[in-house]
Amino acid sequence: MTNGDDALLDPLIGDVIRGLDLAVVEWALDGTYRPLSGTPRWFTGTVPWSSLPFLEHFVADARRYLHDHIGGVIASDQFTVQGHSEELLLRARALKVDQRLVIAIERLQGAADMRPILREARQQALEHETLAEQARSIHAPLANVTEAVEHLQGSALSEPQRAIVDHLARSLERLREAAARLPPARKKR
Amino acid sequence: MISKKICMLGSFAVGKTSLVSQYVSSLFSDKYLSTVGVKVDRKSMTIDGLDVTLMLWDLYGEDGFQTVQKSYLRGASGYLLVVDGTRFQTLAAARDLQKMACGVLGSVPFVVALNKADLASEWQVDDRALIAIAEQGWPIIRTSAKTGLGVQESFERLTRAMLEPQ
Image (cartoon, rainbow over the protein chains, first blue to last red):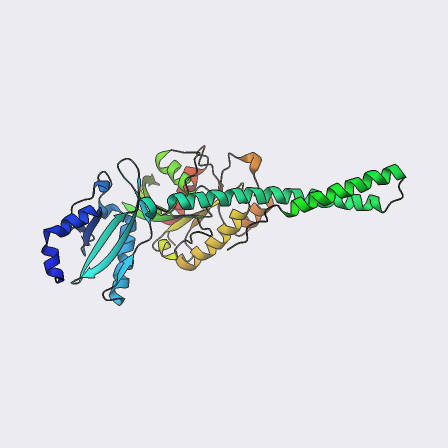
């Protein structure tokens, strides 16, 4: 195990960072970023780091956090920037090394990219909302018809009329059971 | 050049990203691509002779899967509260978000964008609900990210309010 200085001097580290497709930059007090590694392929075509307001926001959070948590590491939320041909999902992590604020930025791809899952989940939530809305629109007229049939059942009817009303009541019962199985409105979280 | 930060707030799938896209790039896509991370767009404009750059923070929609971090509101001069006119429940979500934003930012200007005005046949937010909002003094503008209706007006009205001495 080597100490930190030796490790930084090892040219292998640059290859490791490149291999991991990370961007490692140092934040300076004037708000600029000094690359500590080569620019990753995915960053080509995007705006400079200093033009990313989200990163600026994260640095402010990170400075506060690392002031109180010596030796700590803080990770950002996911953020997106427009790349050369596609939107990139990124996450930054910050730590202090010898009082220098170092930020490692990774591109979230494959399993780390939660966008398809969240999008599918939200799509399903939208569809659930629509179904619940449709269910709500059935319940009110169903209650009205139930009331009317119950009224008829309590009335003086001829034998053929009663047979029809009883048939209606049985069908209505099945309809109510089916309606009760429709999705309820999602509870507010 | 004056720089101002605006946050886009609203329930998921109300059209926050589409409004930004329409305003910044005059683009609209019918395909719903839910925002997962935070995205910041810029838009420069001249308003009443002043050059202003707006930083539009498009935050993911508040829902059971993700909760908007209050810290993202920090430094915002105003916010656009987006409601989907075809989903009544997004109005209640907007009320909650407004309370949260007010708690973090104080009484900074905001505008309610009543979005999806092009989907009139599916409209759910009725006049009674709108009157109740208007009575609270909330400025409401009907918008359509699809047609562009009210989009520029919303951002300009908000920017004007932000530039006024508080």
